[in-house]
Amino acid sequence: MSQQQVSARDVAAAAAALQGSVRRTEVVYSRALSEHVGVPVYLKCENLQRTGSFKIRGAYYRMMRLSDEEKRRGVVAASAGNHAQGVALAANALGIPATVFMPGEAALPKIAATTEYGAEVRLVGVDVADALAAAAAEAQQSGKVLIHPFDHPDVIAGQGTIAIEVLEQLPDVRTIIAPVGGGGLVAGLISAVATGPTSVEVVGVQAAQFAAYPASLAAGQPCAVPARSTMADGIAVSRPGEVPFQIIAQAEARVLKVDEEDISTALLHLIERSKLVVEPSGAVGVAALFAQREQFTQGPICVVLSGGNVDPLVMLRIIRHGLVAAGRYLNIRVRLVDRPGVLAELVGELARDGGNVMHVDHVRTGIELSIDEVEVGFQVETKGPEHCAELLARLRDKGYQVL
Image 1 (cartoon, rainbow, N blue to C red):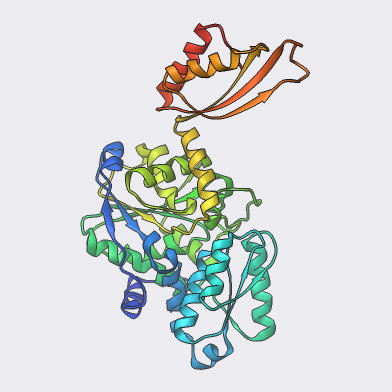
Image 2: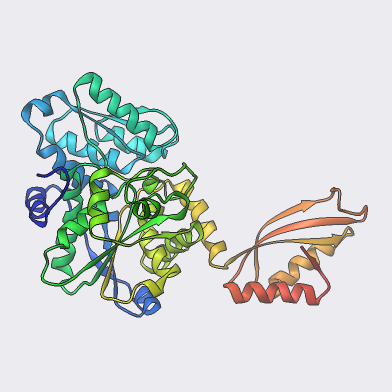
């Protein structure tokens, strides 16, 4: 297989080899997203894949093709979680010793799952780049084979098997949307649909906080971007892979960006309307449909939900963030005269107007407060943006000083 290209035939070979080792995940119709965009929208549920992510496809296929000697020496990998679990499970099934380097701040459930699948986990650095550097050094020193998360033709071919399934499950699909980190998934999808009987566009989506591909495509070569915080840690890759970048650039594929509010809104929508738990990086395709629906006119559309591995504590914060982004969670501060009963009256006003007070923060001292004033912060659950506006207008009409 060429180090520079992955063909549709390569992806088909990977699909045949992986039968029985990976799950053929469901494609489900989304009425709500279809109505929002104006064309039929379907969801490819890789969040329900073994290990909770599409990553097992590429990892498993890459290791299947190792020689007996390479398998005996063992493998080493680096990941924030999903590739780690895919490598660990595949290595366990194939009888290959595995060592996985993960960032020190990787999610605890992902670390625990990787260990339970049988891999040795080593925590190093602060991001995937640090972990990958450590894994490469270990491979060079020990002779173990580095299973790269995205920059290898076998990995790309394995990820592309998703498109083989989509084309069988949804033969008239015209657009496939998928997350982009290093680019292995989108490169695999592009390779799989390249010689199909009908034209299928593959669109990549990155978190705006950590988007290396748009700048790299504009420059004509992989470029690194500074590390920044994003809830979509699974696609927080600072530099595109050489092999996937060439495939994506040659196809002139579009790569869009979405912000953190778009991602949290998408996650909340998937939980409420589709009853699907998806991690932030896996939901960026849905986020793009919400934020940039004018970009998508050719349907049916299939959105790849690439993973569902999310820390429950992180999910709680994301849900709250999504409620705020959707206008259903109002944070306000009100300055009041400090006398008995005033706070109760204000809470009563909010309740009468349908606001559900979730939290109250009472500040009695401050530089800007007079001696007879207090400042009260409220977190209020609402019914949506219009209800938020109504609550604020009603409070101001009644003379409250809303900050």
